Every structure is written in structure tokens, then in C-alpha cells.
Length: 409
Ligand SMILES: NC(=O)c1ccc[n+]([C@@H]2O[C@H](COP(=O)([O-])OP(=O)(O)OC[C@H]3O[C@@H](n4cnc5c(N)ncnc54)[C@H](O)[C@@H]3O)[C@@H](O)[C@H]2O)c1
Image (cartoon, rainbow, N blue to C red; front, side, top):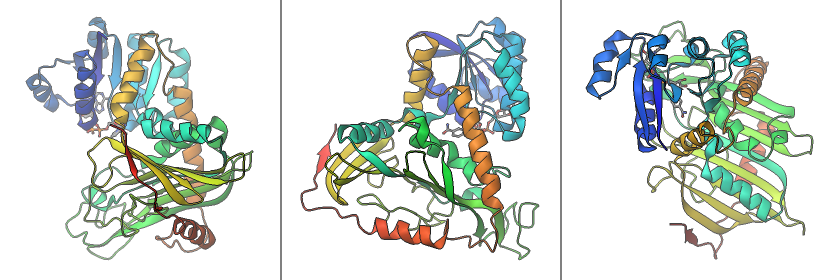
């Protein structure tokens, strides 16, 4: 594929895009970067910083690649559209801040080019494999779980991104919805039966920029409490009666441990910046009434290389098959599908209306979840009975004597 792009923003994710798109045969013809202090760095890596969008458009790029902070996405998309209404654009996720939707909507309406959102979990091989096994087994889903857990404490204390509006739903929220929506749009929303957003308390915060800052809800020196940033949980019932639970803990509390990859303890320690626990589980019954659990494990997995996921198949909670490793570099897969879309060879892997709906949905849950009455436990996400059911179910999984790993490579 021979294509060229203009990149907007040259921070952390932009460097990953430069590498991945380069491997996919894309040449970067210019970089629009607001911070002139970064222009030398852009030149050092052989790229050309330009002053404005007009100069960038004059280089006639095949598409634009927006890698600026989320709070600038609406304004940047507006500037690109003003420079070229027919431009094809990929914009990093989330599509914009919720408060900028009134600015974004008219831009989307007036734009004639193709826009793809880089919600890379829309292009996951693990997700596709889970959906494929659910179809192969002809399962009627009764319960669906998506969990994305890590410990963000050290990141927070280092002053990295806090989402004051979406709280903990802001980090992995759109990934959670991307996974569950792969079963069909009817699975992405429903009647809410439990909803919770928790705070996070961080000790050893001496010297952190957050200690005693406006974010810190705790007056004790050396201890930081961040409201709504510790974890988020929603349980809802779809129209077909399937229960869906979306769970994300930023405090490292694993909600739905499942063998063989659940960490031995149900917690990821604050000192562990590497471990992630990300699963997509579908429980259902086959036409004969037998219960199955199909569990996808996203990378990174303990003992596996980056980009390697797995799928475990359970019958009546006993593992029958472990399909691993499943190569799953969601970033390269999603960008590849995006290029195919721009070339007219495939559907849009994540259209703007999907991303806008996701943002609205997360915002609704974030607002309702933080309005919960009573004292926030800051620990157990959801009601006591939800948490108890979660643990009871998780303890039913067994590895099964016959379960062997089927190598995929
Ligand atoms: N898909 C993923 O898994 C994933 C992962 C990480 C980050 N992201 C998203 O990527 C985006 C960027 O995050 P990052 O961590 O790379 O940010 P960053 O702060 O490291 O880099 C942003 C860059 O954009 C520049 N910039 C800011 N406003 C600009 C403007 N109006 N015009 C031109 N340049 C501008 C900044 O100077 C900076 O160089 C965010 O939306 C984030 O949510 C996505």
C-alpha cells in the first residue's frame, strides 16, 4: 500500500503511529506540532515540521493522523476540515472530550472525507476468536463479562492524566464497549442493575505533584485520594435477558479471576507497572442445554511475549482447550484496516458515530455511578451481592485433567 500522511501532534502515541504506519508502507510528509520546542526532535527523526494546516494540506497527504491530546481533538478535526473538507482522517481515541461534543458534531456533519477513530480493540483477534467460538458452539449468551484491570497508582502520582469527567470509565471504558459490542450492538447497553465508581487512595505520595493539589481529596500529608479514579463497574441486562458486566479497576483489584492466567493473588500491586488483567468472557448454553464459558485473554499475558493473547474454552466450568498464543497486535491490525478503508477496500473499523455514542454512554454511567449514595468503599466495585456472585462464579473454574495447550503458531 503506498500512502502518505500528515501527523498532528508528536508525543508518545505519535511515535508508535510513525513506527507502525511506516511498517505498513505509509510515508509521513509533514508534522503539525503546536510545541515549537519539539520541532528539532521531529527533524532529528527525519520528518518535517510545518507551521500550519494550510501548509500541511498543500503537501496533498493521503490522510491525516491526529495524535494530539484528547482535549484538542474537536479543534484539530475542525482545523483539518477547514483546510480540506474531503480529507481522510484517523483520530486517536477517545474521539474528543465529552464537553466538546457540541463543537465536534457540526464538524462531522460538514465533513465529506472518511474519519476513523483509533479504538484499536475494535480490531482484536482475541475478540474475534471469542465471538467465533460462541457462534461455532451455537451458544445463547446468558452472561458477558469484560474486565480491564491494572494498577495506575504510580502513573497518577507521576502526574499522568486524570479524567475529571469520566473518572475510571475514561481509561479503558471504550475498550470495554468495543469488546462487548462485537457480539452485536444489542449487547452494548441495557437496563442497569448495578453501577459503581470508586475512589483510589494512594499512600507513599510524599513528593508527588498531586499531594495537597486540587485533585487530592485527603488532607493528610503523603497520602493522596483521587475521586472517581479507582475503578468503575456497570451491570446491565440486555433486551434479550443477557446480563452484561463491564469492570475496570485502576487499583489492581482483579474482579473475575480465571485460570490459567489470573494472577495468583486477586490483586495487582502498586509496585507492579507491567501486569494487566484483561478478559472477555461469554457464558452461554448450547442447543442441548450444556453450559459453556468462552474466555478471551488479551495481551500482555504472564510468561508470554507482548502482542500474544489466548482463548480458553470451558464446559461446565472445566477447561477443555487453551488456544495460545494468539497473535493480537491491536494497533497494527486497526491501522491496517483503516488503510484498507481509506483505499476503498473495507468497512470503517470504528466510525465517528460509534465513538460518539460510546462517549455519551460512558458519560451517563460516570455521572450516575458517582452519584451513588452512602460511603464509597473504595475497594469492592459494585454491591456486596454482585461482588459475592463474582467470586463464587470465579471459584468454579477448574483447569480440567484433559486440558492441554493447543499451540497456534
Ligand atoms: N489507542 C490507544 O491505545 C492510545 C494509547 C495512548 C494514548 N492514546 C490517545 O492518544 C492521544 C495522544 O496521547 P499522547 O499520550 O501521545 O499525548 P502527548 O501529550 O504525549 O502528545 C501530544 C502532542 O500533541 C501536541 N499538541 C497538543 N495540542 C496540539 C495541537 N492543537 N496541534 C498540534 N499539536 C498539538 C503536544 O505538544 C504533544 O507533542 C490521546 O487522545 C490519547 O487518549 C491512545
